[in-house]
Image (cartoon, rainbow, N blue to C red; front, side, top):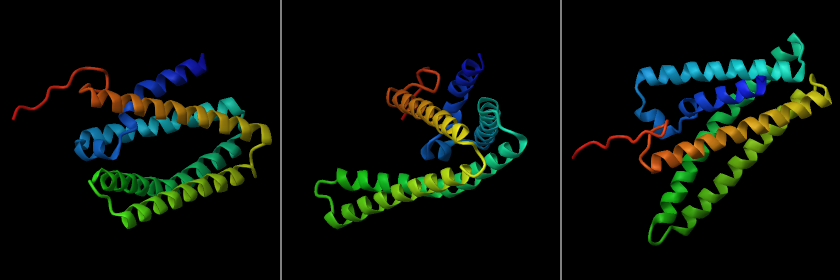
Length: 178
């Protein structure tokens, strides 16, 4: 039952939380505040879910939250830069005759960013191994993998709805008159 509640919570709140950069640019301050509040709720529920699923002590829970927060702060700017690199690369490739040197530079930067993200994930896992048992750590990694898959699916679904001219709940958006 807890898993069902968790899945329902994630599927109903993440479309607003998992906003892409272009979504947040057009968002009003009220929408930004709502998204921030939803992010906080998801973090809180994630922490509760992990604590109960893994059977963590108070000390383990505090350490895990601190580790997740510190490494997420490291990953965020790398992901943001990765989005910029991908956009620049797509724009360059869309040109009739892309600049070979620019494409090479962007591909190299994308690979460097991927390595940085992998290193951050590796370092985070190493730190968690200091205070989680091997079973807790393995279960944590599986829970996180499943969560990330759900988020990725929701983001893909949301992008598809936007491409089809639908809003987050599948409602057709009105297009402004010109």
